[in-house]
Length: 447
Image 1: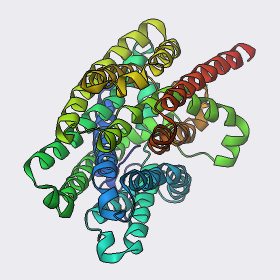
Image 2: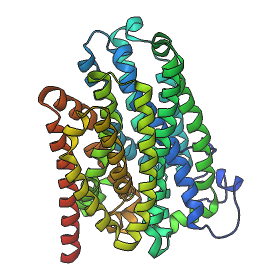
Image 3: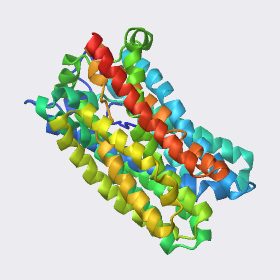
Image 4: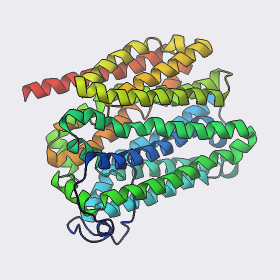
Protein backbone atom coordinates (compact mmCIF):
# COMPACT_ATOMS: atom_id res chain seq x y z
CA UNK A 1 0.00 0.00 0.00
CA UNK A 2 2.22 3.04 -1.16
CA UNK A 3 1.19 6.56 -0.25
CA UNK A 4 2.99 9.61 -1.61
CA UNK A 5 2.51 13.25 -2.53
CA UNK A 6 4.26 16.56 -2.47
CA UNK A 7 5.10 19.85 -4.05
CA UNK A 8 4.11 18.85 -7.57
CA UNK A 9 0.58 20.28 -7.56
CA UNK A 10 -1.18 21.53 -10.62
CA UNK A 11 1.88 23.36 -11.85
CA UNK A 12 4.21 20.35 -11.92
CA UNK A 13 6.11 19.81 -15.11
CA UNK A 14 5.52 16.71 -17.23
CA UNK A 15 8.06 13.92 -17.22
CA UNK A 16 9.42 15.03 -20.55
CA UNK A 17 10.79 18.23 -18.95
CA UNK A 18 12.74 17.00 -15.93
CA UNK A 19 14.53 20.28 -15.21
CA UNK A 20 11.40 22.31 -14.55
CA UNK A 21 8.63 22.40 -11.97
CA UNK A 22 9.03 20.51 -8.71
CA UNK A 23 12.07 18.61 -9.90
CA UNK A 24 14.09 21.77 -10.28
CA UNK A 25 13.37 22.75 -6.67
CA UNK A 26 15.26 19.73 -5.41
CA UNK A 27 17.75 19.34 -8.25
CA UNK A 28 21.18 18.16 -7.22
CA UNK A 29 24.11 16.46 -8.80
CA UNK A 30 25.65 13.11 -8.04
CA UNK A 31 24.85 9.44 -8.24
CA UNK A 32 21.88 8.07 -6.33
CA UNK A 33 22.74 5.05 -4.19
CA UNK A 34 20.33 2.25 -3.22
CA UNK A 35 20.44 3.42 0.39
CA UNK A 36 18.94 6.77 -0.61
CA UNK A 37 16.12 5.05 -2.46
CA UNK A 38 15.57 2.79 0.55
CA UNK A 39 15.02 5.87 2.74
CA UNK A 40 12.11 6.95 0.55
CA UNK A 41 10.64 3.46 0.57
CA UNK A 42 10.89 3.07 4.36
CA UNK A 43 9.40 6.52 5.06
CA UNK A 44 6.46 5.87 2.77
CA UNK A 45 5.74 2.35 3.94
CA UNK A 46 5.92 3.18 7.66
CA UNK A 47 3.43 6.04 7.31
CA UNK A 48 1.22 3.91 5.06
CA UNK A 49 1.09 1.03 7.55
CA UNK A 50 0.36 3.33 10.47
CA UNK A 51 -2.69 4.58 8.58
CA UNK A 52 -3.54 0.98 7.65
CA UNK A 53 -3.46 -0.33 11.22
CA UNK A 54 -5.27 2.65 12.70
CA UNK A 55 -8.24 1.72 10.54
CA UNK A 56 -7.79 -2.02 11.14
CA UNK A 57 -7.76 -1.68 14.94
CA UNK A 58 -10.70 0.74 14.85
CA UNK A 59 -12.60 -1.87 12.81
CA UNK A 60 -12.46 -4.12 15.87
CA UNK A 61 -12.60 -1.73 18.82
CA UNK A 62 -14.74 1.14 17.54
CA UNK A 63 -16.81 0.69 14.40
CA UNK A 64 -18.99 -2.22 15.57
CA UNK A 65 -20.32 -0.12 18.46
CA UNK A 66 -20.34 3.26 16.71
CA UNK A 67 -21.73 2.35 13.28
CA UNK A 68 -23.54 -0.96 13.88
CA UNK A 69 -25.10 -0.64 17.36
CA UNK A 70 -28.31 -2.37 16.20
CA UNK A 71 -26.50 -5.69 15.54
CA UNK A 72 -25.10 -8.18 18.04
CA UNK A 73 -21.35 -7.96 18.66
CA UNK A 74 -20.40 -10.76 16.27
CA UNK A 75 -22.43 -9.52 13.32
CA UNK A 76 -21.45 -5.92 13.98
CA UNK A 77 -17.78 -6.92 13.77
CA UNK A 78 -18.39 -8.90 10.58
CA UNK A 79 -20.11 -5.87 9.03
CA UNK A 80 -17.15 -3.73 10.07
CA UNK A 81 -14.68 -6.19 8.52
CA UNK A 82 -16.68 -6.18 5.29
CA UNK A 83 -16.23 -2.43 4.94
CA UNK A 84 -12.57 -2.89 5.91
CA UNK A 85 -12.17 -4.99 2.75
CA UNK A 86 -13.54 -2.26 0.47
CA UNK A 87 -10.17 -0.47 0.27
CA UNK A 88 -8.46 -3.60 -1.07
CA UNK A 89 -11.14 -3.98 -3.75
CA UNK A 90 -10.76 -0.33 -4.76
CA UNK A 91 -6.97 -0.32 -4.76
CA UNK A 92 -6.34 -1.89 -8.21
CA UNK A 93 -9.01 0.40 -9.65
CA UNK A 94 -7.10 3.36 -8.23
CA UNK A 95 -3.83 2.04 -9.65
CA UNK A 96 -5.24 1.79 -13.17
CA UNK A 97 -7.03 5.16 -13.03
CA UNK A 98 -4.03 7.05 -11.67
CA UNK A 99 -1.65 5.39 -14.14
CA UNK A 100 -3.74 7.08 -16.84
CA UNK A 101 -3.40 10.40 -15.02
CA UNK A 102 0.38 9.97 -14.90
CA UNK A 103 0.57 9.18 -18.61
CA UNK A 104 -1.54 12.25 -19.42
CA UNK A 105 0.12 14.70 -17.04
CA UNK A 106 3.02 13.77 -14.72
CA UNK A 107 4.08 11.69 -11.77
CA UNK A 108 3.90 14.73 -9.46
CA UNK A 109 0.34 15.63 -10.42
CA UNK A 110 -0.75 12.03 -9.96
CA UNK A 111 0.77 11.85 -6.48
CA UNK A 112 -0.64 15.23 -5.47
CA UNK A 113 -4.18 14.16 -6.40
CA UNK A 114 -3.65 10.86 -4.55
CA UNK A 115 -2.53 12.78 -1.44
CA UNK A 116 -5.57 15.03 -1.55
CA UNK A 117 -7.89 12.04 -1.84
CA UNK A 118 -6.10 10.07 0.90
CA UNK A 119 -6.02 13.03 3.26
CA UNK A 120 -9.67 13.85 2.65
CA UNK A 121 -10.69 10.23 3.25
CA UNK A 122 -8.60 9.71 6.40
CA UNK A 123 -9.55 13.03 8.00
CA UNK A 124 -13.13 12.41 6.89
CA UNK A 125 -13.27 9.20 8.93
CA UNK A 126 -12.21 11.15 12.02
CA UNK A 127 -15.12 13.55 11.52
CA UNK A 128 -17.84 11.05 10.65
CA UNK A 129 -21.17 11.23 12.47
CA UNK A 130 -22.25 8.08 14.27
CA UNK A 131 -25.15 5.78 13.46
CA UNK A 132 -27.13 7.26 16.34
CA UNK A 133 -26.77 10.68 14.71
CA UNK A 134 -27.23 10.00 10.99
CA UNK A 135 -28.44 6.42 10.77
CA UNK A 136 -27.63 4.39 7.67
CA UNK A 137 -26.08 7.45 5.99
CA UNK A 138 -23.22 7.29 8.52
CA UNK A 139 -22.47 3.70 7.42
CA UNK A 140 -22.59 4.76 3.76
CA UNK A 141 -20.13 7.58 4.47
CA UNK A 142 -17.80 5.17 6.30
CA UNK A 143 -17.85 2.89 3.26
CA UNK A 144 -17.26 5.83 0.90
CA UNK A 145 -14.25 7.10 2.86
CA UNK A 146 -12.82 3.58 3.01
CA UNK A 147 -13.17 3.23 -0.75
CA UNK A 148 -11.51 6.63 -1.12
CA UNK A 149 -8.56 5.40 0.93
CA UNK A 150 -8.20 2.36 -1.32
CA UNK A 151 -8.34 4.34 -4.56
CA UNK A 152 -5.77 6.80 -3.19
CA UNK A 153 -3.44 4.05 -2.00
CA UNK A 154 -3.50 2.47 -5.43
CA UNK A 155 -2.92 5.83 -7.08
CA UNK A 156 0.07 6.70 -4.90
CA UNK A 157 2.38 4.06 -6.37
CA UNK A 158 5.65 5.87 -7.13
CA UNK A 159 7.88 3.07 -8.45
CA UNK A 160 10.51 3.42 -5.73
CA UNK A 161 10.28 -0.24 -4.60
CA UNK A 162 10.91 -1.38 -8.18
CA UNK A 163 13.73 1.13 -8.55
CA UNK A 164 15.26 -0.14 -5.31
CA UNK A 165 15.09 -3.75 -6.53
CA UNK A 166 16.77 -2.82 -9.82
CA UNK A 167 19.44 -0.67 -8.18
CA UNK A 168 20.39 -3.02 -5.32
CA UNK A 169 23.66 -4.96 -5.57
CA UNK A 170 23.20 -8.45 -7.00
CA UNK A 171 24.18 -10.17 -3.74
CA UNK A 172 22.12 -7.84 -1.53
CA UNK A 173 18.72 -7.88 -3.19
CA UNK A 174 17.09 -9.85 -0.41
CA UNK A 175 18.38 -7.35 2.13
CA UNK A 176 17.12 -4.32 0.21
CA UNK A 177 13.82 -6.05 -0.56
CA UNK A 178 12.99 -6.38 3.13
CA UNK A 179 13.66 -2.73 4.03
CA UNK A 180 10.28 -1.47 2.89
CA UNK A 181 8.56 -4.35 4.67
CA UNK A 182 9.83 -3.03 8.00
CA UNK A 183 7.10 -0.41 7.71
CA UNK A 184 4.51 -3.03 8.69
CA UNK A 185 5.73 -3.80 12.25
CA UNK A 186 6.70 -0.16 12.82
CA UNK A 187 3.25 1.02 11.75
CA UNK A 188 1.54 -1.61 13.87
CA UNK A 189 3.53 -0.78 16.99
CA UNK A 190 2.72 2.92 16.66
CA UNK A 191 -0.98 2.35 15.97
CA UNK A 192 -1.44 -0.33 18.64
CA UNK A 193 0.50 1.76 21.16
CA UNK A 194 -1.70 4.78 20.53
CA UNK A 195 -4.92 2.80 20.92
CA UNK A 196 -3.57 1.02 24.01
CA UNK A 197 -2.76 4.38 25.60
CA UNK A 198 -6.19 5.81 24.84
CA UNK A 199 -8.03 2.74 26.12
CA UNK A 200 -6.07 2.63 29.36
CA UNK A 201 -6.46 6.37 30.06
CA UNK A 202 -10.03 7.08 28.95
CA UNK A 203 -13.37 5.78 30.04
CA UNK A 204 -15.02 3.56 27.44
CA UNK A 205 -17.68 6.23 26.86
CA UNK A 206 -15.06 8.91 26.18
CA UNK A 207 -13.11 6.55 23.93
CA UNK A 208 -16.15 5.69 21.82
CA UNK A 209 -17.40 9.28 21.66
CA UNK A 210 -14.21 11.16 20.78
CA UNK A 211 -11.04 9.29 21.76
CA UNK A 212 -11.03 6.96 18.74
CA UNK A 213 -10.99 9.91 16.36
CA UNK A 214 -7.58 11.13 17.52
CA UNK A 215 -5.52 8.35 15.83
CA UNK A 216 -7.07 9.24 12.47
CA UNK A 217 -6.00 12.87 12.84
CA UNK A 218 -2.51 11.64 13.74
CA UNK A 219 -2.52 9.36 10.68
CA UNK A 220 -3.50 12.29 8.48
CA UNK A 221 -0.68 14.47 9.84
CA UNK A 222 1.95 11.73 9.52
CA UNK A 223 0.89 10.95 5.96
CA UNK A 224 1.12 14.58 4.89
CA UNK A 225 4.67 14.96 6.22
CA UNK A 226 5.86 11.57 4.92
CA UNK A 227 4.29 11.96 1.51
CA UNK A 228 5.77 15.38 0.93
CA UNK A 229 9.17 13.97 1.93
CA UNK A 230 8.85 11.15 -0.58
CA UNK A 231 7.80 13.42 -3.42
CA UNK A 232 10.85 15.54 -2.76
CA UNK A 233 12.82 12.43 -3.74
CA UNK A 234 10.91 11.32 -6.83
CA UNK A 235 10.56 14.89 -8.12
CA UNK A 236 14.31 15.53 -8.45
CA UNK A 237 15.80 15.35 -11.91
CA UNK A 238 18.22 12.62 -10.78
CA UNK A 239 15.43 10.31 -9.66
CA UNK A 240 13.46 11.12 -12.77
CA UNK A 241 16.37 10.15 -15.01
CA UNK A 242 16.91 6.95 -13.04
CA UNK A 243 13.23 6.01 -13.21
CA UNK A 244 13.09 6.77 -16.92
CA UNK A 245 16.34 4.88 -17.59
CA UNK A 246 14.77 1.75 -16.10
CA UNK A 247 11.55 2.40 -18.07
CA UNK A 248 9.61 2.71 -14.81
CA UNK A 249 6.62 4.44 -16.34
CA UNK A 250 3.02 3.29 -16.74
CA UNK A 251 2.32 0.64 -19.38
CA UNK A 252 -1.08 -0.09 -20.94
CA UNK A 253 -2.88 -2.51 -18.62
CA UNK A 254 -4.56 -4.40 -21.44
CA UNK A 255 -1.23 -5.05 -23.14
CA UNK A 256 0.40 -6.00 -19.84
CA UNK A 257 -2.37 -8.49 -19.09
CA UNK A 258 -2.18 -9.98 -22.56
CA UNK A 259 1.61 -10.33 -22.64
CA UNK A 260 2.46 -11.09 -19.00
CA UNK A 261 -0.82 -11.66 -17.18
CA UNK A 262 0.45 -14.96 -15.79
CA UNK A 263 3.23 -13.13 -13.92
CA UNK A 264 0.66 -10.92 -12.18
CA UNK A 265 -1.33 -13.94 -11.05
CA UNK A 266 1.72 -15.94 -9.94
CA UNK A 267 3.14 -12.92 -8.11
CA UNK A 268 -0.11 -12.39 -6.20
CA UNK A 269 -0.40 -16.06 -5.22
CA UNK A 270 3.28 -16.38 -4.28
CA UNK A 271 2.68 -14.05 -1.33
CA UNK A 272 -0.58 -15.73 -0.27
CA UNK A 273 0.79 -17.37 2.90
CA UNK A 274 2.29 -14.10 4.12
CA UNK A 275 -0.79 -12.01 3.48
CA UNK A 276 -3.18 -14.59 4.99
CA UNK A 277 -1.05 -14.79 8.14
CA UNK A 278 -0.76 -10.98 8.18
CA UNK A 279 -4.34 -10.46 9.40
CA UNK A 280 -4.57 -13.71 11.33
CA UNK A 281 -2.03 -12.44 13.90
CA UNK A 282 -3.08 -8.77 13.92
CA UNK A 283 -6.78 -8.09 13.30
CA UNK A 284 -8.45 -11.48 13.75
CA UNK A 285 -7.12 -12.41 17.24
CA UNK A 286 -7.98 -8.95 18.52
CA UNK A 287 -11.58 -9.47 17.42
CA UNK A 288 -11.63 -12.97 18.92
CA UNK A 289 -10.44 -11.65 22.29
CA UNK A 290 -13.09 -8.93 22.19
CA UNK A 291 -15.87 -11.44 21.54
CA UNK A 292 -14.89 -14.59 23.41
CA UNK A 293 -12.38 -13.70 26.11
CA UNK A 294 -12.19 -11.43 29.15
CA UNK A 295 -8.57 -10.45 28.61
CA UNK A 296 -8.04 -6.65 28.83
CA UNK A 297 -7.77 -5.07 25.39
CA UNK A 298 -4.81 -2.85 26.21
CA UNK A 299 -2.92 -5.85 27.63
CA UNK A 300 -3.50 -7.84 24.44
CA UNK A 301 -2.44 -4.89 22.27
CA UNK A 302 0.79 -4.70 24.28
CA UNK A 303 1.39 -8.40 23.61
CA UNK A 304 0.85 -7.82 19.89
CA UNK A 305 3.32 -4.94 19.99
CA UNK A 306 5.95 -7.32 21.38
CA UNK A 307 5.05 -9.72 18.57
CA UNK A 308 5.48 -6.93 16.04
CA UNK A 309 8.95 -6.27 17.42
CA UNK A 310 9.77 -9.96 16.87
CA UNK A 311 8.37 -9.65 13.34
CA UNK A 312 10.75 -6.75 12.68
CA UNK A 313 13.68 -8.94 13.70
CA UNK A 314 12.31 -11.70 11.46
CA UNK A 315 12.14 -9.29 8.53
CA UNK A 316 15.78 -8.31 9.07
CA UNK A 317 16.77 -11.97 9.29
CA UNK A 318 14.86 -12.75 6.09
CA UNK A 319 17.12 -10.39 4.16
CA UNK A 320 20.24 -12.26 5.30
CA UNK A 321 18.68 -15.69 4.65
CA UNK A 322 17.33 -14.69 1.23
CA UNK A 323 20.71 -13.42 0.05
CA UNK A 324 22.29 -16.70 1.10
CA UNK A 325 19.68 -19.19 -0.09
CA UNK A 326 17.50 -17.22 -2.51
CA UNK A 327 14.28 -15.26 -2.04
CA UNK A 328 11.99 -17.91 -3.48
CA UNK A 329 13.60 -20.69 -1.46
CA UNK A 330 13.11 -18.56 1.64
CA UNK A 331 9.44 -17.95 0.82
CA UNK A 332 8.85 -21.63 0.10
CA UNK A 333 10.53 -22.82 3.30
CA UNK A 334 8.60 -20.39 5.50
CA UNK A 335 5.37 -21.36 3.71
CA UNK A 336 5.97 -24.94 4.86
CA UNK A 337 6.52 -23.68 8.42
CA UNK A 338 3.29 -21.67 8.20
CA UNK A 339 1.47 -24.82 7.03
CA UNK A 340 2.76 -26.67 10.10
CA UNK A 341 1.85 -23.73 12.32
CA UNK A 342 -1.70 -23.70 10.93
CA UNK A 343 -2.37 -27.06 12.57
CA UNK A 344 -1.74 -25.50 15.99
CA UNK A 345 -4.10 -22.55 15.59
CA UNK A 346 -7.17 -23.98 17.39
CA UNK A 347 -5.31 -25.35 20.42
CA UNK A 348 -3.30 -22.14 20.84
CA UNK A 349 -6.08 -19.56 20.47
CA UNK A 350 -8.41 -21.62 22.65
CA UNK A 351 -5.61 -22.51 25.07
CA UNK A 352 -5.99 -19.64 27.48
CA UNK A 353 -3.53 -16.82 28.01
CA UNK A 354 -0.45 -19.02 27.58
CA UNK A 355 -1.67 -20.51 24.32
CA UNK A 356 -2.66 -17.10 22.98
CA UNK A 357 0.74 -15.67 23.86
CA UNK A 358 2.49 -18.49 21.98
CA UNK A 359 0.17 -18.03 18.98
CA UNK A 360 0.89 -14.30 18.77
CA UNK A 361 4.65 -14.48 19.29
CA UNK A 362 5.31 -17.47 17.00
CA UNK A 363 2.84 -16.17 14.42
CA UNK A 364 4.54 -12.78 14.27
CA UNK A 365 7.96 -14.45 13.99
CA UNK A 366 6.81 -16.48 10.97
CA UNK A 367 5.14 -13.40 9.52
CA UNK A 368 8.40 -11.47 9.69
CA UNK A 369 10.41 -14.20 7.97
CA UNK A 370 7.80 -14.60 5.24
CA UNK A 371 6.61 -11.02 4.76
CA UNK A 372 10.17 -9.74 4.57
CA UNK A 373 10.52 -11.32 1.13
CA UNK A 374 6.89 -11.33 -0.01
CA UNK A 375 7.03 -8.10 -2.00
CA UNK A 376 8.00 -8.61 -5.60
CA UNK A 377 9.38 -12.12 -5.23
CA UNK A 378 8.65 -12.86 -8.89
CA UNK A 379 8.39 -9.35 -10.37
CA UNK A 380 11.84 -9.81 -11.89
CA UNK A 381 10.02 -11.90 -14.51
CA UNK A 382 8.32 -8.80 -15.90
CA UNK A 383 9.78 -7.29 -19.02
CA UNK A 384 11.41 -4.00 -18.16
CA UNK A 385 8.74 -1.83 -19.79
CA UNK A 386 6.00 -3.64 -17.83
CA UNK A 387 7.73 -3.70 -14.44
CA UNK A 388 6.32 -0.41 -13.08
CA UNK A 389 2.69 -1.27 -13.74
CA UNK A 390 3.17 -5.01 -13.18
CA UNK A 391 4.70 -4.53 -9.73
CA UNK A 392 1.87 -2.22 -8.67
CA UNK A 393 -0.91 -4.54 -9.84
CA UNK A 394 0.82 -7.60 -8.38
CA UNK A 395 0.94 -5.90 -4.97
CA UNK A 396 -2.71 -4.82 -5.28
CA UNK A 397 -3.90 -8.32 -6.15
CA UNK A 398 -1.76 -9.93 -3.43
CA UNK A 399 -3.50 -7.75 -0.84
CA UNK A 400 -6.89 -8.41 -2.41
CA UNK A 401 -6.55 -12.18 -2.67
CA UNK A 402 -4.57 -12.82 0.49
CA UNK A 403 -5.53 -10.19 3.04
CA UNK A 404 -8.68 -8.27 2.14
CA UNK A 405 -11.21 -10.81 3.36
CA UNK A 406 -9.03 -12.67 5.88
CA UNK A 407 -10.56 -11.04 9.00
CA UNK A 408 -14.19 -11.52 7.97
CA UNK A 409 -13.59 -15.07 6.71
CA UNK A 410 -11.56 -16.14 9.75
CA UNK A 411 -14.00 -14.65 12.25
CA UNK A 412 -17.06 -15.93 10.39
CA UNK A 413 -15.70 -19.46 10.06
CA UNK A 414 -14.42 -19.68 13.63
CA UNK A 415 -17.63 -18.29 15.15
CA UNK A 416 -19.96 -20.54 13.16
CA UNK A 417 -17.92 -23.71 12.57
CA UNK A 418 -14.95 -23.63 14.95
CA UNK A 419 -11.32 -22.56 14.99
CA UNK A 420 -10.32 -25.60 12.94
CA UNK A 421 -11.55 -23.82 9.84
CA UNK A 422 -9.11 -20.99 10.50
CA UNK A 423 -6.39 -23.64 10.29
CA UNK A 424 -7.69 -24.74 6.90
CA UNK A 425 -7.83 -21.15 5.71
CA UNK A 426 -4.20 -20.50 6.69
CA UNK A 427 -3.15 -23.86 5.25
CA UNK A 428 -4.74 -22.94 1.92
CA UNK A 429 -2.61 -19.80 1.84
CA UNK A 430 0.56 -21.80 2.40
CA UNK A 431 -0.44 -24.28 -0.30
CA UNK A 432 -1.19 -21.41 -2.68
CA UNK A 433 2.27 -19.95 -2.12
CA UNK A 434 4.02 -23.28 -2.71
CA UNK A 435 1.96 -23.92 -5.85
CA UNK A 436 2.70 -20.47 -7.27
CA UNK A 437 6.44 -20.78 -6.59
CA UNK A 438 6.50 -24.23 -8.21
CA UNK A 439 4.62 -22.95 -11.26
CA UNK A 440 6.94 -19.99 -11.54
CA UNK A 441 9.99 -22.25 -11.47
CA UNK A 442 8.45 -24.56 -14.07
CA UNK A 443 7.76 -21.62 -16.40
CA UNK A 444 11.34 -20.39 -16.00
CA UNK A 445 12.72 -23.83 -16.88
CA UNK A 446 10.42 -24.06 -19.89
CA UNK A 447 11.47 -20.63 -21.10
